[in-house]
Image (cartoon, rainbow, N blue to C red):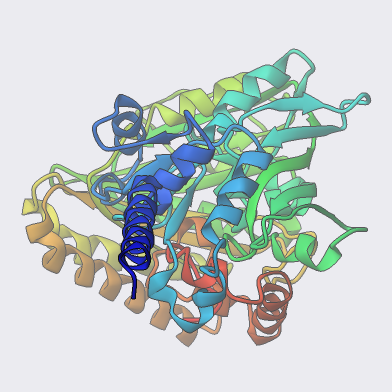
Length: 509
């Protein structure tokens, strides 16, 4: 071989090596993970642990369990198109195809609305990406003001004041800080002052703007994508990311309500049991009335109160006389608008809580003696936790919303005698998990056994008040569960929202 040819081949080889090196350098300069890729394609929307925006978002969760999680980055989209871009980025380059075959290779992410759920991982994630929807918070009224279009990251207590000027309200959360997104899709179907008159909040959603696993943006209504529309009414985060809710508005001027405090005595508790059993009797049903018995335990002291709400402008309505006639320590009962009622009710709750556990169950109304037994069992089982630092426990007994049947909850429409009970415990230290959580679970187990024995127990579990250990989706019944799974496979055939979004109540366990 001539010297010229040899030198030429060496030059070609050298150029090839240089090209490879340059290519490697360019590849190394490309984003190497989902956070960097999203930051490159969606500038200004990604924040990292050192950023104040990241820290503010993480610190704003209601529960200490959620605040303890540290995502690799936080994505704060401003519209559905940006959510779509992110989903397409997650599923690009074959990653989506790998979801079903190798879930660990797919980027994991969480979706946050208000961030009010208590258990760990519901709306935040360790090491993955948290999609914080709170920049998508718009409100627009239709021309006839019968429909409100609300951004998927809005907070109900920010929406209500904007509707007061029109003497309108929408069916959202009853306390400040609850997000629209989670509340309205999980049943997150929702509990509101108007539930006895108009059903669950999800019963009154006309349309959902949804970003599917493919990145496609669709609008689901009773006439278009009807199966998806119905599944979102109780199916939680299993089908896509909802970026807009079109909800019914309702005329609402002044309403009456507030809190009454009582001495915690046997006579008062017996009177409460009799009054509530009578209130829940279908012959006494009043669609304007919604209330609760609130039993508390804090600083080794038991308390009892009523929350009373009446959506018509009637002070001291007759339906509550059996409660208001019980000798009390004082009350905040007054006529006001729905927005201010939410603010006032929220003053009775802590702004955040540390470690916590919340469990829910439902049952048909029963006689006063059974309510008394439930209260006595609660008192007996919770009292030994009095020395746990920061221990607060609440036992809430309230009417379950009267379903109108436009949902995926598996409930009979029109039932007015169903009760929902919630036991919530909050405390300071992880070292007390072993003392608190099994005891609270055992208490709920005892309550449920008693109610089964009385043949009034109902399997349904309300998602917003449930713990992750409870089988919420299964409680809707096997027929509903099968339908939800079929809809998931139709719109998310590779299971992106089952595997890459690990938080929340999944359709397959």
